Image (cartoon, rainbow, N blue to C red; front, side, top):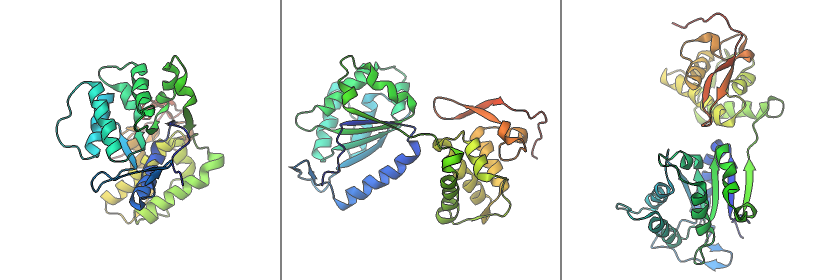
Length: 297
């Protein structure tokens, strides 16, 4: 069976949360050695190691050279990787071939655009294209990140990458269609994963508040739930209560003890709307009818 995608490269925006599950799926495939044959090619393991798939997270503000070094480190390369960007790229591709790697998943790919020394997007495309077209060992990529990465293929003057790319955008959830799923996520993470109970004392319309607080983004819904669980665990509580949700939102939105701008506390929570920056972080409020700013002691 051929487990590889039919296309060479996938650009996925807003897929931050699902990538963890995808990584676990790939690790299961690795553990089962289910990818020992690729498109009819028999692979000889590199020593005792074989990595048909590789998941790597691009470091903050990294260049393509930094990303290649991160890949080499994950594959166990010890020593200082030096040389020109071209030579480091060649070494990375040779190492991936030695390990039988065919599918590379790169998470947080938008970090490459934030490198201190800005790189021409055409150079990034050229680097990826070299790996895709490698005669000896062509690679397949899944690029995961924020919406910034969607326009990368537009920098290809010959439009070659456009036909090789499938874009998959994770749509933002809606209260009408996804409320039950978000409620299930809360129950599963709190009870099944963290081993806590849900207190009878919960914010009114908890699911709706969670989705509104996170601006209907999976990339903010999960951290909000995690923060509530962490707050309960840190206080050695056996259940997650309203106060934990209040503290979780204060941490997520960085609003401190300003309860008037806390979606989990304010009665007029629907009027509290925060901006979201290009990195997916909550910013200041853009609309709030709250005039009284109550402070928690």
